[in-house]
Length: 183
Image 1 (cartoon, helix red, strand yellow):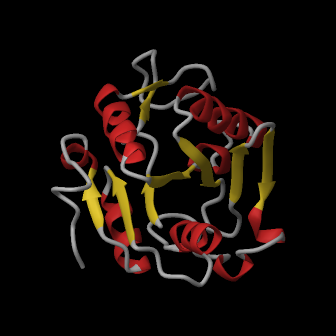
Image 2 (cartoon, rainbow, N blue to C red):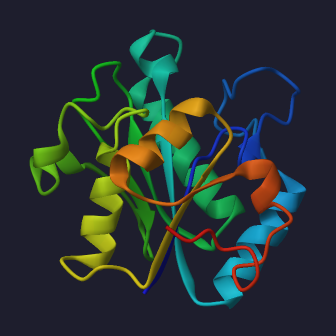
């Protein structure tokens, strides 16, 4: 299995309004070169998941329900993404998993599996990345795994999870056959 984990804000999506942050779940669009890269990786057999901090929930600027709706809208806009992990608190204690298969589902993963990563979910912690690998690969080491992001916290999280990292700007022009970073 080949697992591609994507940061979302600034890597895959951006506010349509031009605002700094997505404040309304419908105020988002997929960044065009990211859409092309996602389609290419999907065609090469990669399983694709998202991992995003949602600090605006913790700061009181967004409700948890809005963050869930936002992730579902991203999944509708980019159906190649299987699911999205998100951490809505500053301490990294909780992680939610949003999927569409075939119905919309959302659940906190810390109550079912992945609880062992509680306290590390928020990037730059490795918890969301570790949970994604555990959930999608089990105890089998993935053939290839890659995390793509646009912030230093993303790179630190990848290092902590022992996963190769690629900057979003580089990934938008990469091919999984040509530019896959090796450990």
